[in-house]
Image (cartoon, rainbow, N blue to C red; front, side):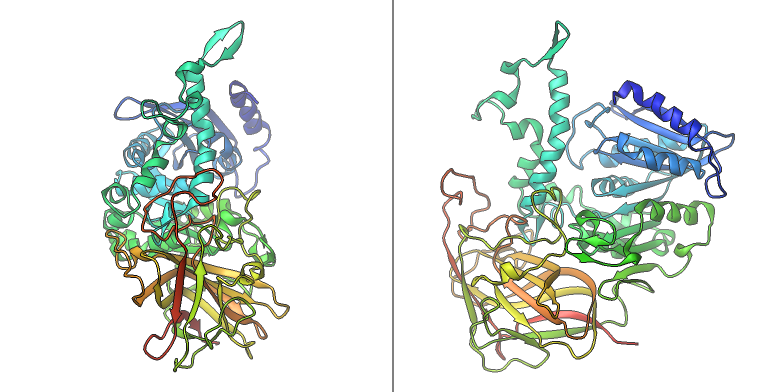
Length: 597
């Protein structure tokens, strides 16, 4: 449908569909397409407005998105019919809005200006709440840091708290699959806008002046590459592998104390930004600038997030309780916050989906105060390699045991199977998947408990304390928590990675001394899962999870370029990596066990 026709189409929807009224949705809807919002530097952003077709003033729900405001028609009509003014704005440099698109750097100022513009609209009550997921969560958090006076609440869904660790990198490793797929998707619109800006009409056909457009030039030192033209931020991400000022300028974690509003944080166990969503809840609850902010934090943890919605995520059906619409959470939150409705948000501040038991549960806080951190120590007779090995997990202390070792070859990395992926499920399926194919590899160490005699609930942060050495000056260590079903199906729950040079600090990398044993702590973020009777708790340890994360070349190089025919890139070496688990080096998986009622 042409953009010029959208307004007419939506007007018809508003007039003829929404008058099917009920107590929850009493209003017909008025619609305005491409309202102009002028930023402080004169750049004009454009927004669609959905509002009750009635006298009076109503609270505003604002979304600032890089994903095309026309994708929010259904929510706009639904929320406006419920008594909200809904404003969906294309952020700077995206779709209908002017300016240059660059991730994160304009969102605080533009968010402030848009909130204050929305607050003085003639039909606005002056209360503005923001909502939405992924990068749209970033637009909320960054606006909240700028504290516009009329921002009264936010609802960030599956978003990050630190755009270095947990968005672009994790544990120092580059999030290759997400970074490349997300950037490629966004570049489609950037390309369209640049083409439109560089076209001439000839006989009614728009033609591109190829000689002036970077896409059709060969990369050289004197001309921009395609990436520089369409996604310069991607190259900047590569240029800043450590946590430096480039990242700190836009990091939410550096500015929790500047946030003054209540927030509903919606996370998901299989989401790529799970760690950040949990840190946002904890950080504002502890450090928010007002008591209203600190007391006004709520957390809901669903299942899939970017990995999918509904009851079936990946290979696992989580039952009918898993069906819950994000729009219902958003509207429920603002019904509570702006209209005083005593709904689920008036109760306990935390609500989580407990997998395995497949049910929702309210909690007094996160992490659960009653959960007990429990150490499952790694054991083996020195051959934990693959499912065929003799690795085991138990709460028994380590004794005199031979270490395990494997060879990590960057030319043959352990592949990603499911997990928290985004944004191309067609080519790499996310979510819970059977891990047995990767567990068949000799460069993957496998440690499992015996079949459980009774159910075991693990809910909360998960980590791995690992004593290791490498023959290389740098390498990666990966860890994955798995629920093994009686039929052998190995369901991945949560995972982590650590680039060894960042073992002490993400700001200052330090290479390994080959052959020296070091203690590493790998953050596996968190989960909530009941391991049923007959199931086993399993840990995988390896040195790659590709293409979710880029391959460590084991040389200490900070980046590599692809070269045809080698499958590797810059020069690399294999690494022999050794994992110790004896009395002096008690490597252990640390999980929070929730006592059975």
